[in-house]
Image (cartoon, rainbow, N blue to C red; front, side):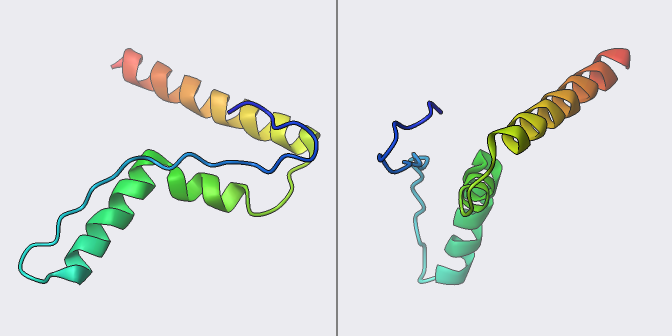
Amino acid sequence: MAEPERGVGRQLSLANVEIRVHGNQVEKALKVFKRKLARDGVLKDIKRLRYYEKPSVRRKRKLKEAKKRRDKLERLLAR
């Protein structure tokens, strides 16, 4: 996601998710919807954008996430 210009609000592009409700099972459809959002990482992004994140903290978080992905890939390749 590109950094917004000064004075311009952030935009979060939500995944186009379609959930169909069968037999008036709204609770089940809501559960499926939440699961899809969590899988796409939308909920994580919303929580992260709730508060301002200092640039130094953002860099550290991104490095930590990259290390986590790298370690996971190495574990999978080691099998």
